[in-house]
Image (cartoon, rainbow, N blue to C red; front, top):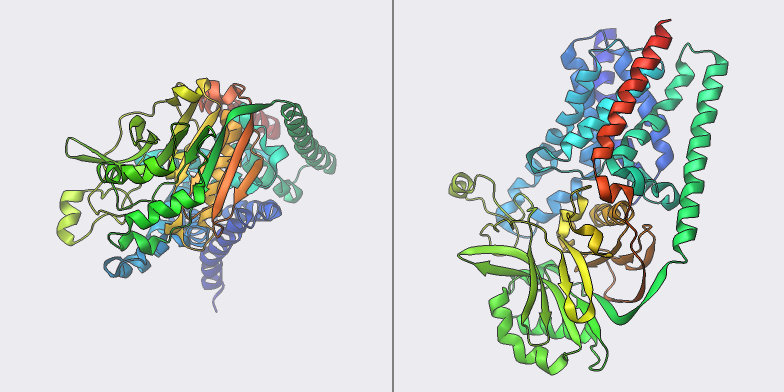
Length: 510
């Protein structure tokens, strides 16, 4: 084999392998240590090919992203297995989605290649800045998909994650990429003394952050408050296949009631997940009023996911109901899943026989805003997040500081028995720390849990478990720096990084 051909194969295959390997740092694997090897080698690969064509450099980033997303998002195709009409799309979705998301890394590394790159601190800082900005753009452009940011490698390290309350996910993502890339300094021309000081300083910062997190958690452990009512998170595990059956609504409602086990004299809030009654809209639910009246009392409140209709529009909603099914409050989902909840370019694609995947086939309409929902009788207020709305950092609610709870209802059955539910669950941990809120997560087929303000999982049910989680006490909410300023902090840190890059470049030039 010719040397050029061999080099070409390596430059194409190596980034793909590095991308696949990086995915194992994410939940549920959480092999964080991998990143300290992957990122230095990725930068070395870019430097080695910097003299090649710009398309060659672009491909390094593109193929890295392709491998990363192919390995970590393969479960998306499971949603296409429930009906024959969608099965031919599985190979397309499996390949096209990772190829598209990989483009972000391709363009990021292409921009990176326009600078003079060497094995030094300047290169590390520049790479981290560009890579993290690209991840931020990915989280917002075309509706945004901030799934599997590199920072989620820290999910199992709760002490280290407490910094999220100060700087947020995107800022910690930037710092994390820098830390993961720092072993590159071993290959640099810097003096041994400089390398030692830099590595020692990095270890010191990581240790300091860990200690800070430990102290924050210890302090908040003294901040528990008793509820004068009970909250029950209901996780029924109703199979997705039952969504396509008809006239089984009464049977499913009876299952929910049996699992909830309501006691008349207990003041209780029941939280049912999204999708438990996929084939029932709110108007049809009222036909089962007698069933609810016979099992729930005036001491009970029900929060659930259900479809609602208004002026010929259908919404994916979270509703607050009393035992007579009177509507006390409602939130219409504002972040809809493309193809799952609405069909982009619907007028065109419907003619090709396409439709949305979830029950009903007609696209949902988008809600106007996310308001704080409250239950006056219990003086209980919360921020409603339906399904993947919880993945958006810094985009919760302007009134968020008035509540101590986030309620996230979801249907993760579309993910199948895969790594998807674990990745989705990790976002709940990150949001709780960022916003300083207790997260109540009720899923039909997924991980249901009660997560405190420090991201600690107090109680949980695995995606294979059917059951109920009872909440009788919680940690009181304290406003965090991030909940106050949001992603403005990320832009401030970007400015700091730009200053550091100029300073390091000047020193290295001298």
